[in-house]
Image 1 (tube, rainbow, N blue to C red):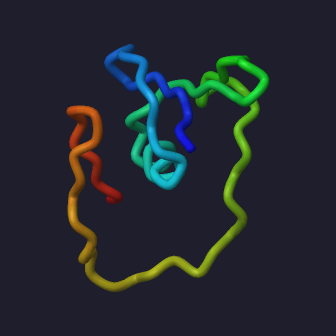
Image 2: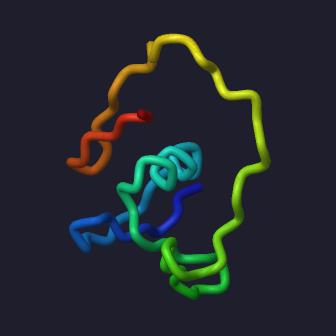
Length: 75
């Protein structure tokens, strides 16, 4: 399933749901479209926050990915 997202350069595209949290965390998107067709601004709209999790404290080993022409990293 894909979610309509607006990237920080104002381009709108569909992102796989599996990448949605990564896109939010990295700040690559500024808005997304909910299932009720309403756009949500991630800076001012109601966005569900993740609960506190045990964060991995070791070195970053994940690969950078390229998604819709945007370099995505989870730093």
